[in-house]
Length: 110
Image (cartoon, rainbow, N blue to C red; front, side, top):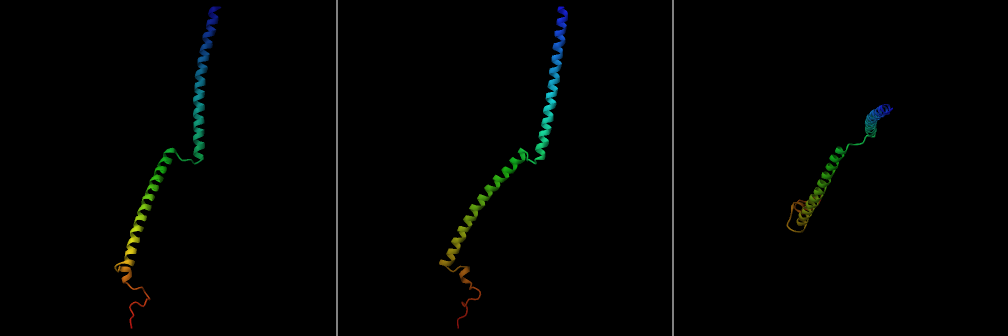
């Protein structure tokens, strides 16, 4: 009887080992199916991938920095233009004051 119970226990251990292997396979299949389902779901939602998001984010940061630099440049140019405009009106005759305006009576001395 000891041999019979030992044999039964060996068979039971073998059965449990096989069942554990089958359970591992089922787990892998379930994970794969879930992963594919999730990828399909996310694909249908039209979401962007992380890499694409990072690239666009970097482009936006560069565009903001460039816009700020251009804003500073425009302000500098406006300041220079205002100084040139002010110098032409207050001091030596510049091209704006030298030319008579159309329709004015500046050139008609009778």
